[in-house]
Image (cartoon, rainbow, N blue to C red):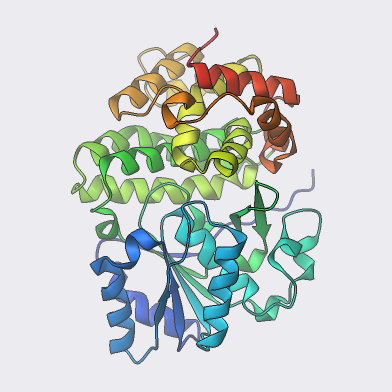
Length: 386
């Protein structure tokens, strides 16, 4: 069997490691980094302190924050304009998934002559990029969910086509990642829960994928174990640095593991997010049990082994499903899509978009559009069909 495996990057892990940001930038040859973040963080002390740290060490650092929760191609283009006009030479991707994804896309596009969509993850499109012109990246997550800090892609909304597209290049992988739990302390319980469930969805779908990648499978199992042990504590007590740290690690593990692929949760969450601008992690959290049941005939034995490893009192598929439902209730995740303000008027369209989403390729079952629409309908109505 011939396979190609790639694993991530240099991670600086621990409380207070944000103090190493200037040295991290300098080690990558940056003297004028652009800090890319979302508007919700831009005015917080953690961002101004990061800029001040850079300035104190002789680095010119400005901030770009014109980013939607689901970043758009226009957001990226605007960031590139600022990068070029201010003469920046690197990117600090700072924040949750939106800041990280937008920052990585800005770093990719800043030195290119082609438009963003030319680098969609289709075939060998990534070869179109001038690899030497991709700006270096330091990534600093402030949520424990997407794991984008260890990924080689960004999910960006094409607002003209109303779809999320994956932009990919190997050099979009940040060269240095800082995992500092102190930066996640201010995250509200609701977002801690949603982003934590996003990390769970990454680990769980990677574990369930049919792709042969034992290293990714092992990482996914341990990532799920960390989430089981620490997500409830992180939600209940946002100042629990140990729980916050373990969730940051579990998030990075999920994004490392999903080199093995994702599945129907993401295949549905991407079109739902594009059409309704809903929070990605919350969508995955709501969809999780419905997709598990849809995949049951193929993943039942695998999930039972996972349940046994997790030490569940009922080490079976049913026991694992009940743990998921109990966890969601414990951390106040909605049970259905309707609770997120999503209607049932575009289910057929969502089914078609799900089949076309790249995540569908590694779902344990290759569903048709009608089956995806049916899963979405069940998730909208809150009907778990056994």
